[in-house]
Image 1 (cartoon, rainbow, N blue to C red):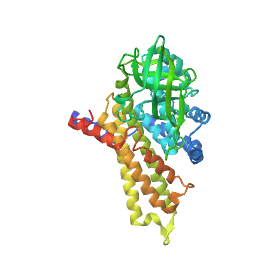
Image 2 (image 1 turned 90 degrees about the vertical axis):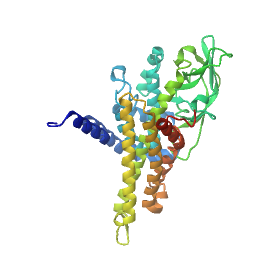
Image 3 (image 1 turned 180 degrees about the horizontal axis):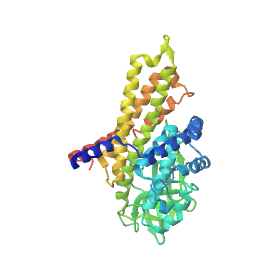
Image 4 (image 1 turned 45 degrees about the vertical axis):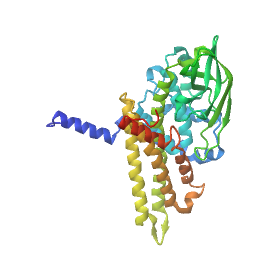
Length: 404
């Protein structure tokens, strides 16, 4: 801009960054995704949600349809067969998918995140073996970190992979594993040991279900009902030694990175669900007539709408700030936890207020509000509770840890 000093230009650049104005190409991507969601996904969401956990056959069908929009292996560069989208573009497309159908957003997001984990590995053999089928949505993947006694503290996990000649023998239980019952590949975080006497250290190993069977049991949930979530039990599960994703000692660092991104993903998902609830409330407030006028003309309803709109905008800004920092190569622990903590709690408040605008109709399954509310409630736990996020935020600010 003519006449501006360099510091003034820098200030304007920072303001534009805070506004998160999308590029022309990003807006085109968003519009294309919105049209697809409107035509193909939103109309079937309620039907599939009522069926419970989605089958592998149905999941693959949906995943194949989402390939052209960059949903599968989103962050994998084009030169390696992926869409080559940025973290911000991940946020754009996944917000729209979560807005249309939260459970499908979960299935797709976890598969894409697992693809990223495999792609980032230094194990070229695994990449050549697994990525082609995953990127073509011929197979499904998941990440397995959480255990019954090791949730927000992954360093306390007890699942062990012990080397025995040319194989690892895995024993342990993983809990709350997204896609667990339909996954062909499991990127398993575990203690990797060279023998029974070795204390070992956290690493990652790829478990192929066809070659290395394990037990997967579905966990039925209050929300995101058609998003498969399971307990995985590994009993003397034999996995080739060549399937190491990250060796002992390197797994914890990469697990922490994946959790930071997962919090951004959960944040933008919560924003999508809340935005859907807000739009439904606005439409209902304009359509519903009581006492001879639209209920949207009542001041208390207007207050609810205004409060919801402000909260959704604030959460979206926090979420895209964190995603943009990831694009800049920053770990952004504080910003990702802020986005996740605020957005997940915001989604509960906003969907609750949207229910209130609908009155008793909001309780009916014929309306999507009860599904939005149930789905939103889950996000205060997923990828670390709100309280854990607050401890991370305070640790990053104070330099003092309440945990370790």
